[in-house]
Length: 368
Ligand SMILES: [Fe+2]
Ligand SMILES: [Fe+2]
Image (tube, rainbow, N blue to C red; front, side, top):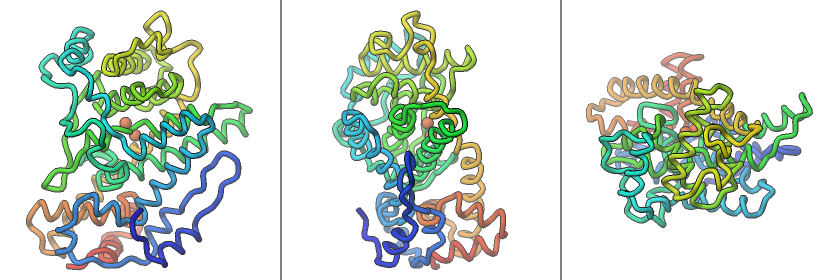
């Protein structure tokens, strides 16, 4: 855990609410982002790694605790233990597989671009995640939550959304959904982003490739869940994050991702229970938890644009008010500011209060 000042700790406790029933104890991250901040000199910011930035950010660590707390509420002890272990170390254990063989099988199944020469991003140690879960960006550098700790912020919002959907469907419709499948699938849904989106020297992150018609993080995350023995219902729900199976085109995509992930993890998807014995659909009748995972992942609808617009506004400010010209330094400043205030909070200020309030907000965490 990072060093958290007494004031921050007190404000965290103040905003800690122990939810009744299904909802995890949640931290009011907006309140934490709005709480008093210490300004850091830009020269100090330039010497920090993205892991340092995420470690020191109270909002990032609070978001991560939301995700961990939701995992602790998983009822099945085996799933709970495996989910917590993914969060602690999302190591790319699937990279131990025979890559040449996997590539060939994916090619013959038409699930990978035939020009590809490798399936996996670079791996130094398959037993160790290249960075903590809590320091990864939430997506590619021009997409959503693209800052240190963005994955924790994205997953936290998704997880509390999934918890709320489970609770609301029950109270409004009397529909009883399985918490472990819906919330477990949501926690795991982007587990390989720390591997796929490693930070680069210029403070941006690795560019993602496509796999089976979607961002590779999705298929690699599904494969890792399979390799770690996560139950089939949870993996199937996780696979629905990027598409839902209500149309045949949508279901074909989800089934393709499950097949690709099964090739990577070295399992038979029908035997594992990931797809129906016919081989073309999810297990029938289709469980609803996959839709919960899909709906709760929709944070990206606004957060992608909000992050892009915030990044543009920050770059302008960095040039005009902080005198920066080096793109690396501009990106370092952006990462630090977003990690401490979140892109969504900043865009909320910019869109509702204008550029002056936005600049004042940024000045709370950095000084020239
Ligand atoms: Fe994803
Ligand atoms: Fe996601």
